[in-house]
Image (tube, rainbow, N blue to C red; front, top):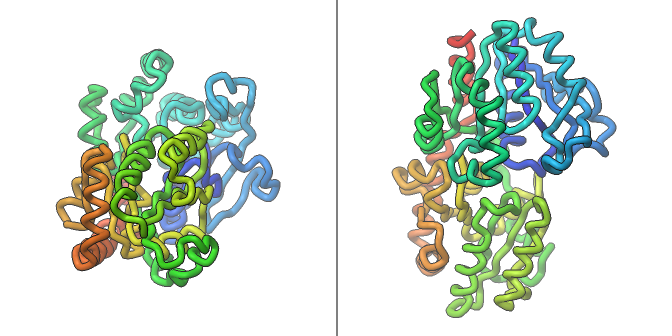
Length: 393
C-alpha cells in the first residue's frame, strides 16, 4: 500500500505541538511494518534547518518539505502554509498513491490536497486533531465560518472517513458539523520503549538548584490560550498559602507572545521565585522533566487528545487533567489520574490530595502506566490504522 500523508508542518517542527510527534511516530511505525509512506509538508518551523530541505528520508519515511509563502501572513504567522510548490507536487503525484491521509484543517495543504483527491477520484481520510471542536471554532469565528462554508465543509463531507483521536472529539465534532460520512476513533500512540530508561530524577533538579528537595508540579505543552494556564497559576497561588515545598515548572514553546500573559499572572501573584519557565523541552530533556516531577497537570479548556498526559503516565507520574482533555473519560474509567473541572478551586484541591497522600498518588501512577500499555502502544495503533487504510482504498 502506498500512503501519502499531507500535513501543514512536520517533524521536527516541535513547536507546533503534539501532532508533530504523534503523526511521525505513526508514519515510521507503518513504514517499519511494510507500508510505503510519503509525506508532503511545508518547511514551517524548519527554515533554518538546511539539511531538511526537499526530499529527506526520516526513519524510512519519505518526507518532502516544500517552501511556503509569507505573502499571507496577515492570516497568521505561517500565512495559511500557502505553498505553490506543494500544490504542484500533489497535482502531479496524488494519482500514484492508494490513499491520502490529511492531518489538520484551516490550512492550505489540507484544502488543496482534498481538492486534487476529488479531482483524481482518490480516497482520502481527514484527521482534524481537535481543530473542529466547537470551543476552538469560536475563536476567529467569522473568518472560520466563511472559510468553512467555502472550502472545509466540502472537504470534510467528501472524505472517505474522518479520523478522530478520542471518543470525546468524535462526539463533540461529528454531529455538531452535521457530518454523515464514516467516522472512526483511533488514539495517538507512543513507542513504549522510549520511556523505559528515564534520566535520573536529579538531572533536571541539578539544572535548577532551587528545586532540590522540593515537590514539582509540571505543566508541559504549548504556551497558548487553550491550555488553561491562567487556571493553573491561580490554583498554584492558592496552594502556596498552605504549602511552601511545592514548585511549579512550566515547560513549552510560546505561541503568539502568550508567555507574556503567563509572566504577568506570575508577577501579579508574587510567584516569581517559585515558578520555573524552561522554554520548549524535547528528547532527553523532556524525559528528565517528567522524571523529576511529582505531579503532571494539563488543565486545558479544549484538548482533543492530550499527548503529554500519555507521556507522563508512561513515565509513571500521577496526572491531573481537566474534563476538557479528550482522554479524560478513559483516564477516569481506568482510575489512572484525577479529572477535574477547569477551575482553580477544583485544581488546587486535586493537587493537595496527591501531594498529601503518597499511596493514592502511587495507585494512580501504576494504573496510568498500565493504561498506556493497554491503550496507546504505537504498534497496535499502527495495525489498526493500517486496517482502516486498506478498507478505504
